[in-house]
Length: 130
Image 1 (spheres, rainbow, N blue to C red):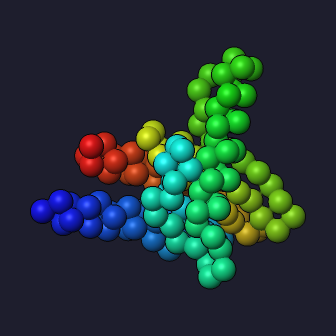
Image 2: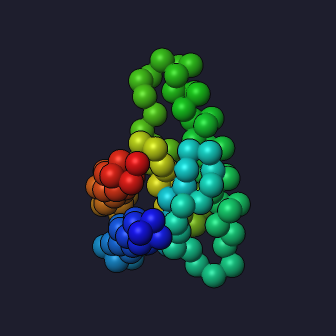
Image 3: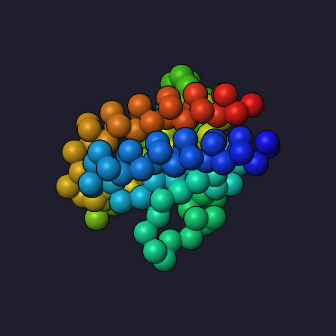
C-alpha cells in the first residue's frame, strides 16, 4: 500500500514536469528538489547530474531567501538568472523547489506563467502526500 501511494505521488509530479516541457519547447530541463537540495524528480537531458543540480538550486535558494529577509523586501518567490545561452529560473513550491532552464529565445512571460501554475500543483501534491 505504501509503495502504491509513493508511486502515485511520483506519477503526479512527473505529469507536472512533463506538462511544463510539453507546453513550452524552450524549457530544456525541469527539476523538483527539497529545500535541502535533495532531488525529488527531474527531467534532464543526458549528461546532467541530478544530484549536483539539486544541490546548486538549494544553495541559490538559501542565499536568495536570506537576502530577501535581510533586505526587508518580503518573502522569497523566485530567482531569475540570465546566461549567454539561456535562463535559469527557480521557484518556491512551499515545501519544495522547482527549477527550470530555458533557451535564450524563451518567451519569459509564458515560462513564468507555466512555472507559477506548476508550483501551485506541486505544492498541492506535496500537501496531500503529508
